[in-house]
Length: 119
Figure 1 (cartoon, rainbow, N blue to C red):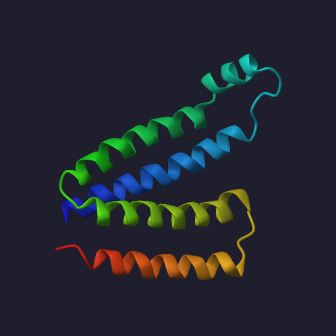
Figure 2: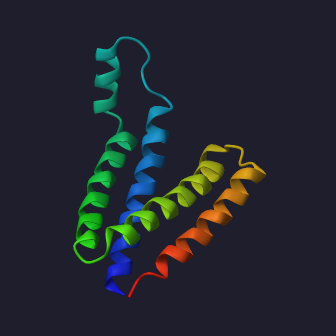
């Protein structure tokens, strides 16, 4: 059970890191590359996203020491995709098409099948 909690933490940190970086980059300073970099250094959502990527790496590394890569990676990426799609719709008002919904259902089916290999 502890393994799944840490994997879930890794997935959530990774997915929300992407969401925070998207949020932070929506209002970046236009202009030279130098202004862009300086703007990034004071961008709290962006820096928070980078921090969450670091936490995701720590949690995921711990999981990989205890779970097969062939199981952990598909679950990590697939569930992360689903969370990002949902957050994109909720927070950024992005359109989600029926094709994406059907694809998400197929992803969930695939995660379930991959997870059957957990012993």
